[in-house]
Length: 545
Ligand SMILES: *[C@@H]1O[C@H](CO)[C@@H](O)[C@H](O)[C@H]1NC(C)=O
Ligand SMILES: *[C@@H]1O[C@H](CO)[C@@H](O)[C@H](O)[C@H]1NC(C)=O
Ligand SMILES: *[C@@H]1O[C@H](CO)[C@@H](O)[C@H](O)[C@H]1NC(C)=O
Ligand SMILES: *[C@@H]1O[C@H](CO)[C@@H](O)[C@H](O)[C@H]1NC(C)=O
Ligand SMILES: *[C@@H]1O[C@H](CO)[C@@H](O)[C@H](O)[C@H]1NC(C)=O
Image (cartoon, rainbow, N blue to C red):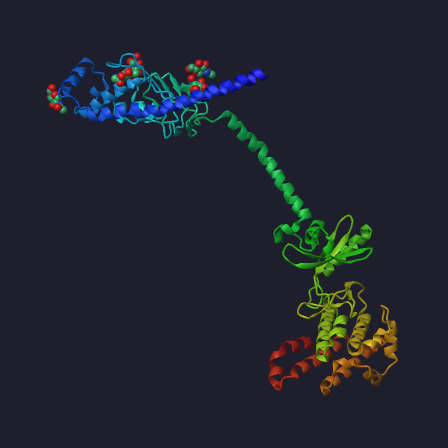
């Protein structure tokens, strides 16, 4: 164990030393070697009889590449060529560098290989004797060095282990009919579109290992596997995600894709920070009331019922919620939807202020015209419900009537009840009307939810008795106000009347209230006519309907 690790350390050390050595030598080499080539090219000039030397050479060996050129030969270029050729011959350790040499061997020479490659004139007259070129392992960058392909006679070309990129010039290889060995492995060529061409069949796969030019089998299978397996997995994953969203968090989906009035437990959980105790605003054995904020910023009240209801009961609950969420009136608390889970059912309504009409009456002692405005809103809402949703029953207790942000009264307790409760509804309004006018102490004596005692007591009184009990905090000093209050009192008494025929209809109540309300609005203004003519056209129309 220990021996082998010592050996490994030594091996690492010696290879490090070797690399250091090589790096130092290589970094020194280019300065000396390259300098001599470049110096020679600059300083040496063709001798005067160079013309004749070449001529004799060509006569002796007509197949020399520079003899095959055009008639006017560039003597200067040819002279430079001979200099580079002799240097390169020596670099490549060829035996006889004066006349001809068979190989260019510049492997592992990253500093001088690019220099020799850059001498275009040399490659143009590439000596016919050269049969093998090896430029492997030189970190050469750029595109394929096509100047090499001037040496059409070569048998072997090795460019492996470089960083060459771009296309392999496959057409450029066709004149190289004697080429039997090619190695382009370990480069960064781009994938060839002609990978099934003659060229690739000429050489076997080991000439192109990791060259980039051929479709890598491993990578190909990987791509196929990714496509065949990954894509279906992705689709299934997306479907599961979408399904999960639809069933748990439809509020995240675009508005068009969701049923807006059905809430899921996950939505409520998110809206209430996981049903946190800070959001719990009211609690009894079966009902928990939470305040929450939906994703779109709407503040809501969530009434959670923890009771155990039958399947039939749940169906009824949903039916009822569907009706209630259809109701739209400015004096009705908006029902946004419902929710059901294994452990609870819930009804979600808009969040309102906590202030009830009861608190408002005792707190701020509002004047008559303000009270009238509240009554007007309630009657308007009652009319809407009677006309459009007669099956909806509601509660008009001052403790259940709330206020909206702009001080509109809101009916907050309502349910789907029975169709024929008009009489009861009018009676409830009568009680409300009397409560709004009379001294707080009067109805306080008659507690209880059904107001039975209060009603019986009221029926026993006449109008004159009642006038004594008007809430003095209203300060009805003005005569017109006083008349209205008196009128309202008798209307209230008529509403709580026992027999059907004595009770006024909702239309009559509405008209009476509206008339009083309208004349109050006229009061502060001296200009009677304009007021009547323009601003209240709408109201008049509503009344005559
Ligand atoms: C080279 O010499 C030949 C005669 O030997 C002559 O015809 C030719 O013009 C000369 N070329 C140059 C470029 O001097
Ligand atoms: C050839 O290389 C050897 C060393 O390898 C060197 O001594 C000699 O001077 C070189 N010759 C030429 C002509 O560059
Ligand atoms: C290939 O080798 C043959 C025989 O040695 C020769 O005749 C032919 O010219 C060579 N082809 C090229 C393109 O150099
Ligand atoms: C590929 O060619 C080399 C030499 O050209 C040879 O040694 C090797 O066996 C060949 N491989 C295949 C798979 O044909
Ligand atoms: C090409 O070079 C690489 C790396 O040196 C080697 O693995 C591969 O066998 C060579 N191919 C041939 C055909 O010699």
